[in-house]
Image (cartoon, rainbow, N blue to C red; front, side, top):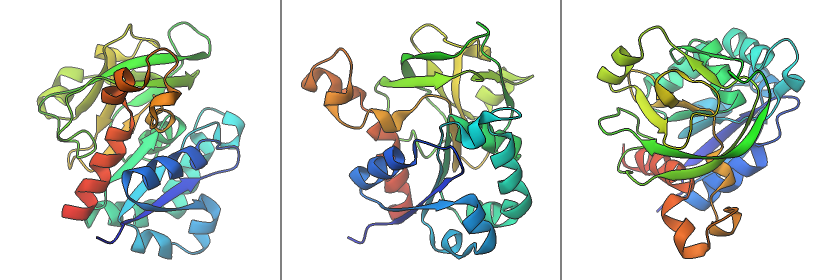
Amino acid sequence: MKRPTALVITGPGTNRDPDVAFALETAGADPTIRLASELAADPTPLDDAALVVVAGGFSYGDALGAGRLLALDLSVALGDPLRAAVDRGVPMIGICNGFQVLTRAGLLPGSLGHNSSGGFICDWVRLDPVAGSRSVWTSGSDAEIHCPIAHGEGRYVHPDPSGLHANGQVALRYSSPNPNGSVDDIAGVCDETGLVLGLMPHPENHVLTRQHPVLDGEAARPHLGLAIFEAGVRHAVTA
């Protein structure tokens, strides 16, 4: 079976794009990494992509607010091609800074604010996939996911979290203590199509059992963040 093409969008300062590419390759995709500025000059790779990932990790050094400048790049230069990709059924995910980017670009509901603690948090968290979610990235998964977080602006804000849940747009909740004050313990949300997912934790940093800081291989296996990428690849192949 041909491996689907995955496009990883990055910006100056982003540092998780190699990890995302590795996760996608491990999940069965053929990833390429492109700067947003490159895609603005030539958006053709978006036309050919079967999956799209906006990688996280301090784009533009988080100057002027986390994800703001990269979101400006995407919404101004790439807004129409990104929406066209979703319209033709391409799964899209934004992780950490990428989640911030997708909310600022208007592709996901809500926004991200400063952590309720007022400081940067680097730790491991546990996530529960939400039953009944529309998200194609969590489809078929009910096992708790363990992965790290590293953010200062990860508090998810939305005026109607119960409405989001009723509409199937809450994809992931923190099952460990809420690290940042996100409303209703929400860790990840999707758009109304279920194709676009945003989350603050980094599932790309737990795709191998040896990456878990506490559990051994067999105990860590059911909790791999790899499941999210496998679900996205599976949808791209079968849709």
